[in-house]
Length: 188
Image 1 (cartoon, rainbow, N blue to C red):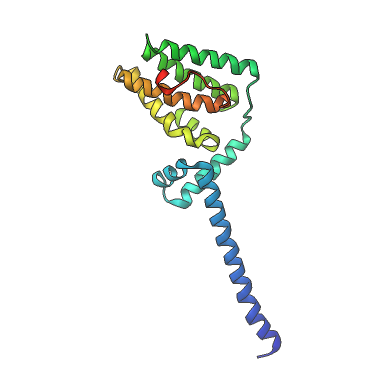
Image 2: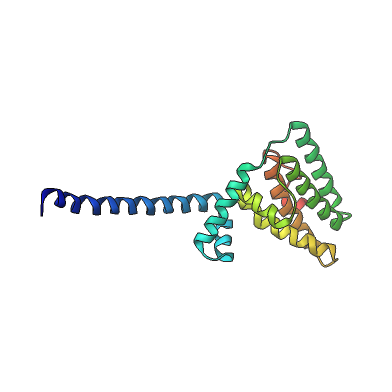
């Protein structure tokens, strides 16, 4: 074997091994980044999809869609109006818990729209919110479920109280999370 052939026999496997290491590292870093960004939504996507790679493709497509959205902060005046509307909905809970939960759902949806999120359907709202608000999505799902049962007159007052607490968590995140609206969870 000539010197050139020997060098090729050594260099080619090294290049292939380095390429494989780079590829594996890229997948591991990407997976870790997705897990950190999406939190529990990452695990949910893996469980409900066709495997880990399919779930990761789905989450990546959510990120791409989110980049194309015009998400914006609210001006201070709008933030204050929303905070006041939320406080009214919570205060109304004592006398009309069913109406209060309906108002909370409406306020969250309106706030999403005003921030630049599309609101065309609940499942799409979840996907769009998952990019920046993944840690409150389970609460939003639970609140929405109670809200649907409320429409049919099937939710208890305690479930409605829980829904208000869940809606409040997402509401505060969407509003900016710097203000507290309504005190303790038991105030709902």
